[in-house]
Length: 63
Picture (cartoon, rainbow, N blue to C red):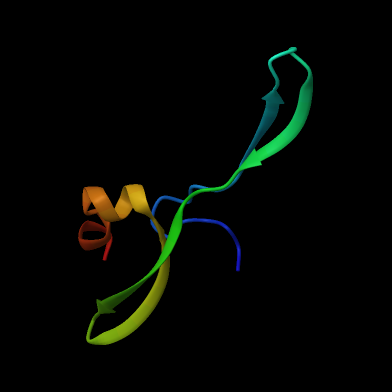
């Protein structure tokens, strides 16, 4: 499963984890994805949707 939202295409981001002593180490941020069942034209689909899209209601508007 790709860690990408099916609605807004939000994916993983990379950057640095910075410690208190200002040392840098590479890290990634992945979106908070949930599996959501959606009815699209009478058929059920399972989408991987980020919680931001669920909260703002973009699922209803995109289908």
